[in-house]
Length: 536
Image (cartoon, rainbow, N blue to C red):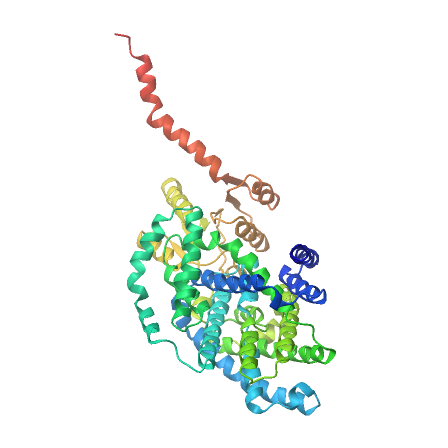
C-alpha cells in the first residue's frame, strides 16, 4: 500500500493547492482517505517516526532563526501566559454549557477534565503557523516574531505538562545541560569546518536529532525541546541561515507525514463531528482574546490582528496533551478523535482567514484602532526616514557596497533599510545612515514616512519574492522615481521589468564581468608589456 500512500497524498495536495489553500489541508484529507481504505496509523511505524522527525526539525529550524531575547519581551511571555489562563477561564464554562444542553461526550466530564480540555484547546499550532509565515515570507516581521515567540512559550507550557504527567521529574543529569553554552565554541568550530554541501546537512541532523533530541530525552526531557534549544545555541553562527535552508526540504517532507498521521487517527461519528464543529467556534474567541491582549502591550491593532489570526487554530500539542491524558485515564479515549477533527477543521478555517486578514482589518480598522494604547510599542511606531535622495532596501554586502559607491559618486542624502538590528548597529558605527525596517513586511510600508525628493530606490534584498513585493508597495505609494534591483537568475528579470523596474543587475553575470575587468586591470597590461618588449 506504500505507493497508494504517496499517490493519494500527492493528489490531495495538488487538488487543494489548485483552489489556493495550503497543501497541508490536502495532506490532512489524504489521511482520512487512507483511513477509509483501511490504513491505520498503528500499522505504519515508519510514517509515525517521520512525523516525529518533522516536528523535531521544525523546532530546530525555529531555534536557528530565533533571537532568544524575543522570549523575554512582555508581549511574548506575559501575553502567552495570560492568554493561556484567560482561555481556560473562558472555555471551561462554555464547555460546561455544551454538556448541559445535552452533548453526551461532555455531560459526564468533571471540572478537572473540562480544565484539561480547555488547556489542550488553548494552544495554537506551531506547525501550521510557521508554515503560513514561511509561505508569506513573514517570519522576520514584527507580528511574525511575536507569534513565533508566543508559540514557543506555549510549547514550553506543554513540555512542562508532559514532564509533570509522567509522574517523575527529569534525571539529575538534566542539570548538566546547563553546561551546553560552555561547549558552544567547540560546536561552532565544527560548524565552521563542515563546508556547504552534504556535510552541512549531516551536521544539522546530528545537532537536531542527537545532540538535541536524543540527549534531552536521555535525561528525561522532551526531545523536541532539545532540538529547539540546540537550534537557539547555533542561531548566532554566520551559517545558521544557510543550515536552515539546507534542511528545509527534509523538514517539509517529514511534516507531510505529520499531517497524514492526524487523519489516520480514525473516522469520527456524526456526533463527534458536530462537537468538533462547536469546538471550532472557540477559535474566534481565541483570536479576539489575542487581539485584546496584544494591544494591551501597545502593539498596533494591525500587528495584533495579524499575530492573532496566525495563532487562530488548535494545536498538535493539544492533541499530544489529550493523548497523554487518555493514556493516564484522565480523559475518555474517543476525545483523541474529536480533538483531531477539531484540529483539522481549525486548519481549514485558518488558511482562508490568514489569506483574508488584510481585508478583514480594513473593514474593522476604525473599531480596532480604538483598542490601541499610546505610546505605541517602540518597534511598532512610524519610521522616520528624513528626506533622502537615494534609498537602499537591504544593507548586506551588496547594499553596503552600493551605499558607499553612491556616497563617493553623488554625495547627497542616502538611506539604507535593514531588518537585522545587529547590521543596523554595525552600519551606524561606520557612519552610514541606516534605519531598521523589513521591506518584505506590509507593516513597514504602512509605517514609512514619505520622502518627496526620492530619486532612486535600489532593491538589494537577496530574495526575488521580497524585491517583487517591494516594487508592488512602491507602486501603491505612487512612487515616480527610478527603481533598480539585483537578481540571481535571468528569468527573474522579466517579472521585475513588467512591474516597472527600470534596471536589473544579475549578480552572477556581473561577477563574471567584474572578474574579467579585474584580470584585465591587474594582469593583461603586464602581459602586453612583455609582448611589446624587444627580443634579446
